[in-house]
Length: 167
Ligand SMILES: Cc1cc2nc3c(=O)[nH]c(=O)nc-3n(C[C@H](O)[C@H](O)[C@H](O)COP(=O)(O)O)c2cc1C
Image 1: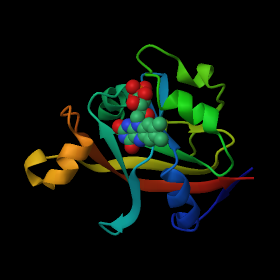
Image 2: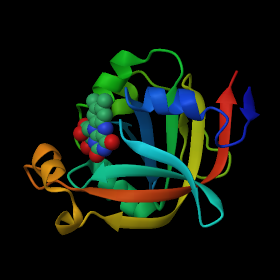
Image 3: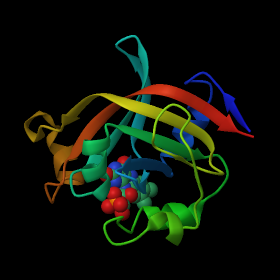
């Protein structure tokens, strides 16, 4: 059973787990893919609750999210280490990661993108702003540390249309 909650009710748990891994799911033309994310922000902008995800341009997720304009984030409140490992190392270009990681999808409540069953906490987001990183604006030490191959992130700010726990 899903319980609708305020977008920031589980912020502490969400941010703690996000740094260890969460699922960013995208769907386009009936094809669903999920990848592990470790960076992101839950915040408030334009008078709306916002989840900002950061996706490198090399990801298959990047191709899908550019077309779908929406995404979900499912945060495992209980350990899902193996599935996070698979979804953070294999690409949806070659692998059906939902099957490989033995994940079950649940339909989104407000958007067409599903969430990952069993995670416990879900965000459904509609992209309201996106921006590719401009390397010239980035701190030099971060540039050297995180982007030696030039694979920069695009920031996707998604309005949180639904936030709920799974009980
Ligand atoms: C813990 C962890 C956190 C990650 N965080 C991100 C992230 O925030 N953004 C990103 O672009 N890739 C991140 N990755 C890498 C992607 O999950 C990985 O490259 C994945 O295979 C991409 O899948 P795709 O090609 O199906 O999109 C992370 C990987 C791990 C293991």
